[in-house]
Amino acid sequence: MSENGPLPGRAVLLCEALVVPKGSAAECEDAHAWNAHRAAVCDGASRAFASGRWATLLARAFLVTALDGPDRSGPEALDGWLHESRGLWAEQTAQAAEVPVYIRGALARGSAATFVGVDTRDVTSARAGTGPLMEYRAFAVGDSCLFHLREGRPTELFPLDRPDQFDTHPDLVSTRAEAPESLAPVLRTTEGACGPDDVLLLMTDALAQWALEAAAEHGSTVWTFLERAEPDEFGVRVRELRASREMKEDDVSLVRCRAVATARAVAPTPTAVP
Image (cartoon, rainbow, N blue to C red; front, side, top):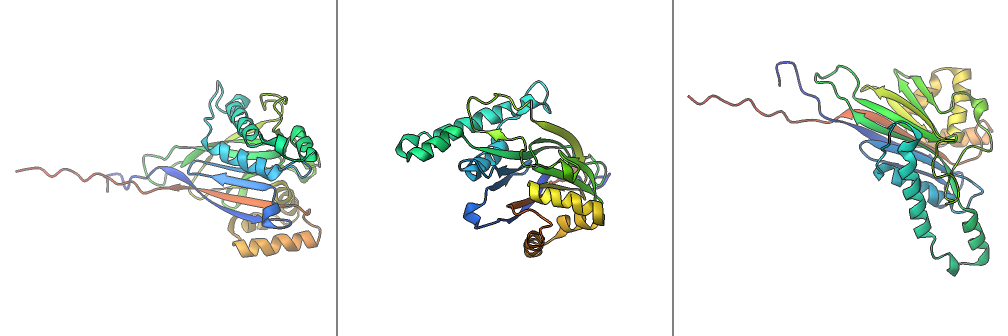
């Protein structure tokens, strides 16, 4: 132990996913992915070809693509991710000539998905228990959302903060090579910082819209539920909400992320040799 108390370790994301498909798990069009510093949730467009596959590709590519640019939080930061994802999609669909004509037509029209992702940076204080653990920058296209909770209440509702902002034509990330090469026209960004008790909730639109409606009516109980619900409890509640038509019939995905300081060894103080 140092004179000033225990040294904290590097801050990492500790995440868990709760998914309730509207049908079978194989038909789910949502996707999620995370590592120690990033997390993403994507929702494939229902009428697009193989949108679940595209959503999965986007979420996984977000974890490994360099997010750099003149403005690290601006639209240019994701241009490389978009280009790489479209390239991977083109490689995966290169055998289109071997599939039926109607499939080739669907491939030509392309696929699409909404996206929300968070990229974090360790800013652990030199003294344990003081200051934030992480700073983050979040990106979104469409109506998949990130809600930042502190002490059980939202400090950030991103990119939508009212239930009436959801509609049937959200902005989308498209596979089509002829689509704009930058997401600048549709990308939303925000920044923040997380302490040890904060929670980042990344979710698809059906859950996000319900949460905003329920919070307006019932207050903080909805945030407590989203922050603490066990998987079985969560699944039962989502199905009840669908049955009562309080939540639209759609795949539901929730990824809960917390900033956690990992243990870091402290070198022993050298012993003086007599």
